[in-house]
Amino acid sequence: MNERTWPHRSETSHFSTLPFPIKNPARKHENSTSNAIRIRQFRSSSSARRSDQCRDFAALPNDVLTKIAANFSLPNLQTASLVCKSWRDGLRPLREAMLFLRWGKRFKHGRGGVKPSLEKALDSFLKGAARGSTLAMVDAGLVYWEMGKKEEGVALYRRAAELGDPAGQCNLGISYLQAELPNVKEAVKWLYQASVAGYVRGQYQLALCLHRGIGTDQNLSEAARWYLRAAGGGYVRAMYNVSLCYSLGKGFMQNHRQARKWMKHAADHGHRKAQFEHGLTLFSEGQMMKAVVYLELAGREGETAAVHVKNVILQQLSPPSRERALTLADNWRALPSSR
Image 1 (tube, rainbow, N blue to C red):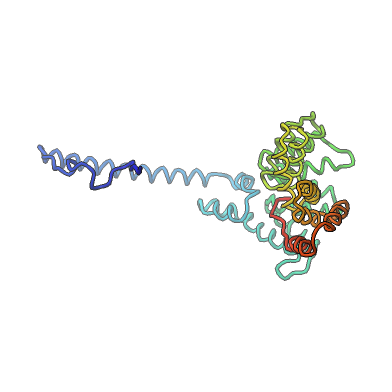
Image 2: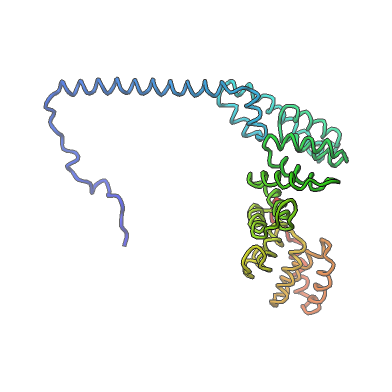
């Protein structure tokens, strides 16, 4: 039965349209006048409040504004620049930094019709970093790291991390772990900050530390929780580890259904060990053609054991089925991920 929760216009009471006599016309005029005055007062007070808010925004010092917006992307900077003239002027260096950041990426990856050049990329990133962009600081740090100048890279990561950039915090934490004399306490501190900011690579690295007891007490349930958050954010290695946690009952209650689900997720996103193990699962279930597809994919990525199992299965398939399975593998594409 269809029930309406609000009556149709034709179903409303006709009493609402009856006119009521006005006993005192003068009083009506007084009320109208006082209402008009109140409306004008309200409008003027609203305008005054808006003006006060603009003055409050404009009063923010440029150095504070630049620190707040240091990790903003170009769209966010453009939006913030519309708040008031003071912000538009104060954020100009960061908008310029975005231009240098874009050119740095072009030089680094050889995009936009330019030849790859780490030196030119670094120069562009450093110019962006000098204008206060943490995004440029992190990219400059990465280039220094690739050049073997790790101290310079770490210094830039630290600048970005202290300004609240999650990628800088994560990279700084990993740098402390990989140092000749690791500083595991500092590593965990920065990885935790990146993790609570939602940075999935930081969440995965923090989970590894909790899992192995590096820089903190071993805590499998907390490790599993951070693996799951990173996996939910699209981090493929975390998907694989979540599957293992469910399969082995470490950090989570043992749950083979969830283990299979996350193993397939990892395989579909391109994790070669997950492809191998999911292929074995399909083989054990008698799904031969699907098993061949995943084992073929794993073998192409270097899982040699997958090649042996795949060849055993192929001997059991008809020639058309073999051809079909290998064609599916040729046309397969990994789902997008944050790696």
